[in-house]
Image (cartoon, rainbow, N blue to C red):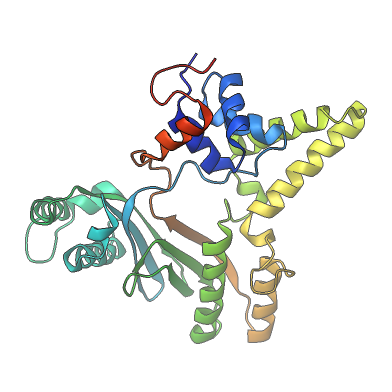
Length: 315
């Protein structure tokens, strides 16, 4: 059995919003398996749906760059938020976003790309680490392009133009007026930043994620005590709701909270006299899935709950 510590209880509380004792019990019931504990709490109705693959804890910046019908987004991490405010670091993120736009569409090729002024991106990164005095890394990058239309960028919590904590690219295919597409794209990107859809369409959702939801919905439905046929309908209804709420095109547009995103796009195309298609989107949130070292708050949790802080197993 994996050991349950104050730190793991704290992490589970942050991920699910469940009470301390419920988190402690969930970890005990699942032998300390964090993901299984999340599912256990959700099956018991003690936690909201978890969309994130892990706690967002890394520092640094997301950078976006767009030119014509092509756009790129990059994530560059640092140890502290202080470095993210450093002009040298910001200039580096801005430059590598531009390099990604020119064709370096994965982290490995981006690191190998020539950096303006000499050397490679990786060599410049190494130099920055030495001069700034803090570890940094180019974590990921992605590129979007359309044949005719617009790739529209948006940065949330901007630290400087094109740099921030959340970066979004929206690819709109259309022959409609470019300025109108830019406005629509910006609204859609703001929606994506806020709503964090998991896929463009319901059928595009990760099958493993859908099956995980099905298992949780099945356990909940079975606890209702209803007949098997009713349970089956409850499960399918739950999965349909999950697909609808987590697919971008079927989400309710944040601007009015009543119109589906796909209907907003269709209406705009009709207004402009040319069909508009949302081909794809990219959303990078700083530190997704990266864990940070625990703070001393774990000791406070331990003192309040009697949970072992380090290696002492929970009875």
